[in-house]
Structure formats: structure tokens, C-alpha cells
Length: 79
Image (cartoon, rainbow, N blue to C red):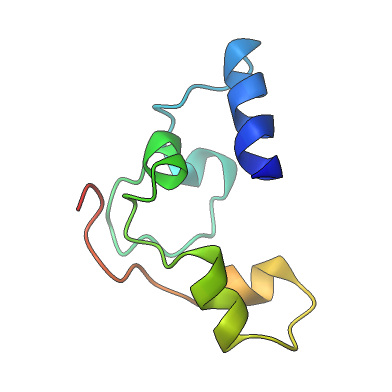
């Protein structure tokens, strides 16, 4: 929730757009060629597994990048 609020505040300040591609801010994120928008992440329609699912799989990981970057989308964005 903290991250969502931070993203929304940055959008309000026009420092980013909710329509920015995820790879603009995380260029190494494995999108499998999909265009994932920040708004899709916030609405849980990006195809990326949710935080709870990632945490359950990686309970002992201390780095978010180790949890997120090796993962690929479960579904196509928008679904």
C-alpha cells in the first residue's frame, strides 16, 4: 500500500505517469515483451503475481529484486 500511495503522489506531482511502461522505471524487469503500465500494477491487472504470492514463495529472500526480477508474468497484462 505504501508503494501505491508513493506512485500516486509522484503522478500527482507529474514526476511520472500512471501510463508509463514499467520498464521505464525498472528496465530489467522481465515483461516477456508485454507492455505493462504502472496503472496495471496498481490495479492488479498487470499479470505479475501479487505481493502475498511472491512472499509465500520467497519467505527467506531479503531483496525485492531477487523476488521480482526472476519472475515472469503469470497472465497477459489487462487480464
